[in-house]
Length: 451
Image (tube, rainbow, N blue to C red; front, side):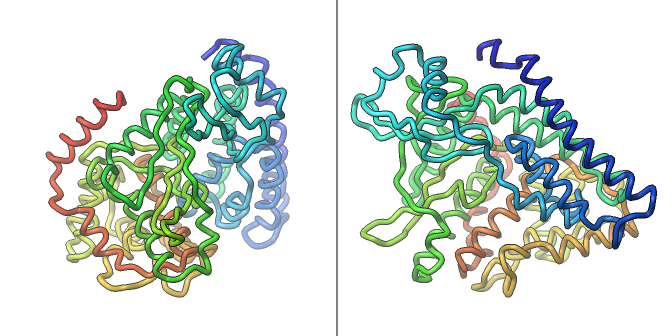
């Protein structure tokens, strides 16, 4: 990564000023309202909207971080979380002239000669970069993910400011302490800047999911990739939301593939996709019938120690068998500290929400009678009520993406109106589960991919 783009002082200073001014104005508004007794119930009327307005114009990595933290129950107030969840986490697209300069900086001034075709208009945009469709000299259709300029500066400046909303909330309503969660999100965002690492993630997923005909993972084109440019196979597919009116069998097939793409790597290798939202999946068809998914993005991948995977399995089995001490020990493995009976009771409300569909041996939706927008909201409110009485609790960093997965996967299954036996699917993923075998598989897979 070139020094002039890696962490330029001017770019970082400008980002600090923009974020600080917007977020500082929000903090002053909230603090003033508290001081003078303004606002409605809990003194928060309009605060959520003010936060969204303050941060929404900035887009980019700060919005991605805020949206991730907003899925943790009551790390931010529910109305704040709802406002943040609705924000768009993408920057304005780079124009054609800018794309030419960026491609030249990554592949050299003769970059265009390395492609048979290259569309200067983006096919998709995200928080850290945009995707262009191209064709290689040997005729392969590819997706070129090109990082926006100065993203290292933007990430560092945004992360330095993220603690503002969290620290303000800790002072006003300290039932949840999300400081460790913020550290976890910061590490994953910094990793996402490294497209060479993302290329290794993609190779890891091709290895872990090899042999599954219902999940497609793109290959990496090494010669056309750098630290800020990632070139992958172009996989044809359609938005998962377009299947809302498809036959139930097709919707269930796609949902089954989404489930396997997340839980099998976790149960067998200790690896999870940390951002399983609908935009990271595309359904593909065979003979006109939707039968599986393309897994499209590998920036936010979390690799857990085998012991943590064992803790998740222990929690699942402890809840299923009603073994209270096993459940408590699982929380300790997850990283929760200072556990009391009341705190365990509060945590178990959320655990039963996350793992509940896996415990229930029947054909069902992921949440019977609940809409995608309301998924988890009732449980989060109940957890918060308990913690206000019995807390506070420091959320361990290992919790962040397990929680994010529950929300992301649940939303996908609800949008598909999928009816599956999630318990049996999970038991299939756990077949012959053994921590020593998992550790060996993980070590071999990471060695092969250079992670």
